[in-house]
Image (cartoon, rainbow over all chains, first blue to last red):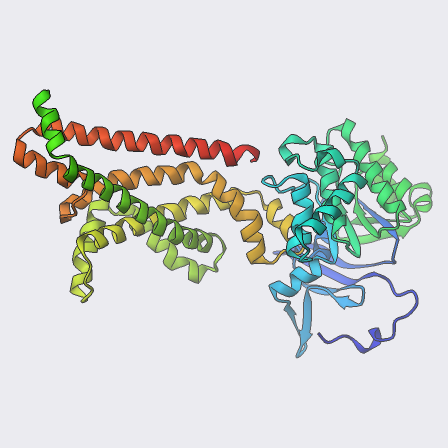
Length: 266
Length: 218
């Protein structure tokens, strides 16, 4: 791995995640048109915007579930997904991509638990196969994290035996047990029945309070306001506003954000 | 009736040998066909187009050809190119190639019916492609492919009777030999038919039991 020379001197406050000029196309459609975003350690940033604004795609690029055509994503000093040689970008090999993906945790809108594994089995899989832990050690960590999300008694239940909210909390435990540098949460309450939303939001809030670095895509405006240090408003593949929640929600500068907030106010 | 039972008793060993050979041939074919089918199914889903193409052609040719034609081809073609296969070996090759195509196709379907979120979740925790296949996708696909897989086993037991055409001494050929000696045509064909039927019903029940055991959480 060749690293840019400028990164060798670690500045005291270099951002944990730095996205520079990120561009992404689906065919002829520009989904991301030059996105710049930086996250410091322990920062909690929410991305809001209407559907189709590119916010989920942004998250998926950081987790390397999508390829991107331009720009750079740097996580903890390491350029993600591509290397440049002879002035051309090359997608990294599968093994490298897997290693980089394990640096971030991802929680999905539709939970995506593995249905053939118990709750503990879901959390243990990455610990066993990626972190190469012994079974007992992985089991202990899985139990710790399941207890952390309030599901100690459900460790041996299968996903089909759990409610949506419980499944999503297992998914959160699965992501966090890998000890990721950064956790990506993609509309984690959108698929839930209304009465189950709060238990998941409380879980997210408590891991934020513990000092995890979170990048959150959400439609829950109140939650974004409560949990975030910063809120980013995206529209049509660009970041339109970026500021503390009080400013974004209390004093929107752009016409489009004001309009968006008016339409989502409940 | 008593006369028939007497004849069955007299012919018990040849019939038993034929029955055993039928089971052995079907077991060998399902074992080889399953290995082949796993390879084929995975290639059909994940390989780039150019590598996928020969597997696609193989599957379509096998599924579009009558099993008897496959058996005759496996019996006559190897000797032309100087390969010396016994009739039984040729029969197993034909049945295994037939099963490999069917199992490959049903595994392809099972893999493709897994929601894409499963592989995304597997990748997001850092599993490599082979790990994702081994620990996330295949366990789910094999479970949902279990009922049609058992069905393929039933097809092989029935299909193995066609090997009598190339002189393999399985249950049907042995039955025909006994008929040649006793002239009790209908009685012995019904007897053989009942043996096939009972075997397949047992296999089906076994499949249902296994399915209940492993498939509960999908």
